[in-house]
Image 1 (cartoon, one colour):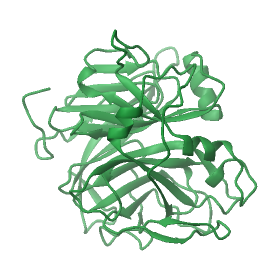
Image 2 (cartoon, one colour):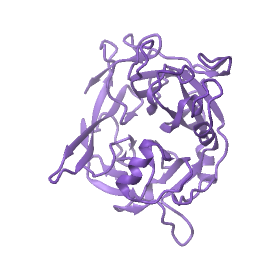
Image 3 (spheres, rainbow, N blue to C red):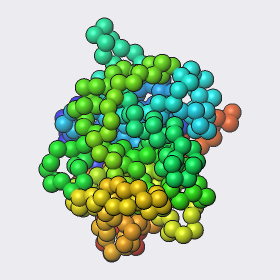
Image 4 (cartoon, rainbow, N blue to C red):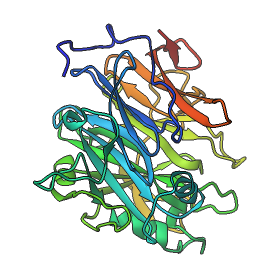
Length: 368
């Protein structure tokens, strides 16, 4: 760890990750005390200092490493990992040329931040004591919903589940701000305008202590099934979005969860790119719209500024590739970048930009 503790007042206004020949940036996580930032590049986890200089990385991830979040108490980065065979999964296997098991599997993965000290550390390698820089908790609820036919529409994938992506570290909905924190993970949801049973974001919560207790090193060619059912399942009605929640982040300043999505295509919805969940309000068991009488724990939308609609949505265009809330009205948003190198090879990068909450702005946030 560095000797300096960074806050939003000393945090750089912009940080460039550098270009990498991996998938596009899926999420960011910031270690303020350590002075590090983590980037999920789909098949690698990159660790840099706050000048963007590489410190270490974890590679040999064959699946889709999505949104990530940092737990400062355990000094772990948690993220969503999909090992699947749809168009996204096949594309990753084709690009990496690596072997993947035939089964579809979904995990919350846990990275030991202080062990990431060099570049290209192998996600699957264990030491003499059986420890690995990355461990994984199997998510049977997600596997079931991804694999089975929906009872309402009769179409594949219950709720339109395409797997998991958005991940955050924060309190239980309706609990006190200083209460025990959970790891919250959101379903990806396939875009489909022909069904009405896919208009909710589906959100699960897990205990980070249990993730580390039950999680174990992962061999992706032979996935393990060490896991447990979710502690709670929630629903947030936004209308169908394209691949569900891309990034989720808890903001202590407004007591909201920020929900960044790729916009939906149903004309009956406004299709915002960013929504807010009110974390201070406990979920209410309600009948779920479009679910033929099914009931579930429904989350409340938040309006942290006047520019946010009653449905909790706004038109701010960043967040899908990463967002971090400092807890004082300041935020770091990732902006995806790509370029074509000599020879035609495409590389990807992230520019992390500092913003502040601006109640007077129609875009909700203003660049610092």
